[in-house]
Image (cartoon, rainbow, N blue to C red; front, top):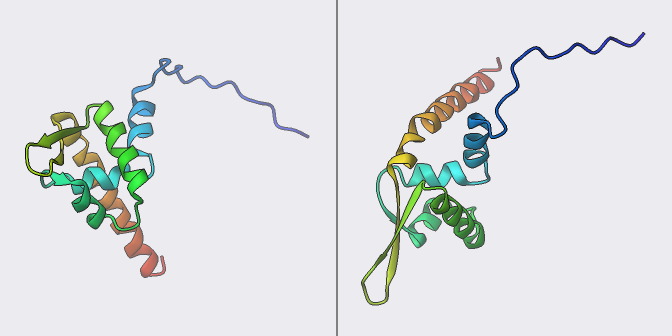
Length: 118
């Protein structure tokens, strides 16, 4: 006998749910890593590549552009010869750091539990 489908009584989220928006941003491949490595200050593209060795240049470029478009990362072209570009977190980007730190903390605890055989 099949179970009767119950109606969900939770209020419907707005069309553009704030949680969904934020998770879509930080849930992307490598995005939290990029934000994390910019947390201590401005970094050039080559420095970010060295910080995150498994990321391809193409994906790093895509993530940086996406984060810049969303107002999370600031891109500054330095007037050097040859010109260089530095990326840094905006104020909005810095607001994501406590959430990412909390995820890191939980990840550490999960890893400790796994290693302890729990």
